[in-house]
Image (cartoon, rainbow, N blue to C red; front, side, top):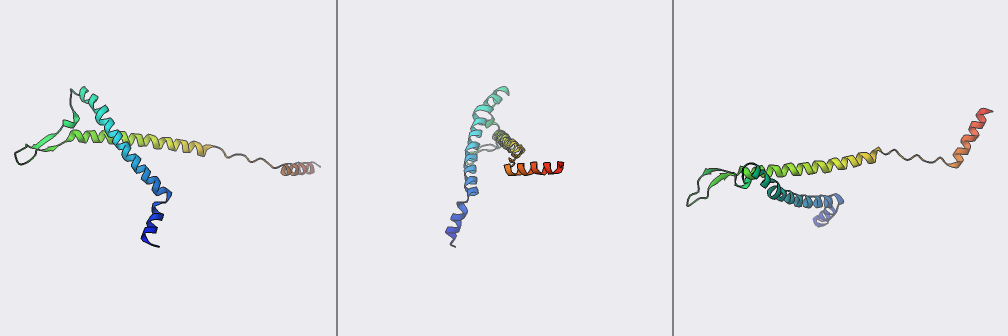
Length: 133
């Protein structure tokens, strides 16, 4: 079996394709959450904190010179990334919890009681009549 045909059989498995779709959707969801945090959540928080823009929060370690850009620690961007992560984690938690509850409801359904065939009913009646006599 050639390497190319082996790779094709690996890549065409259902779970590999599902995983690829999940990664693509997850990356897109991450961008949506980042935009939500940066453009919707953080501005009101900044206003509540006295007009602070979190993207501008930083500690300057070394001032800018003619030869070198300023060296900074951008802790505002870090805080924004933490909030991104928390929102994504919450969304994943809610999704997994919903899937688990649907799965639990599906497993909790009692198995359907099989209908007793007519000949078995007749045999049971005959047995009961024989016991009485």
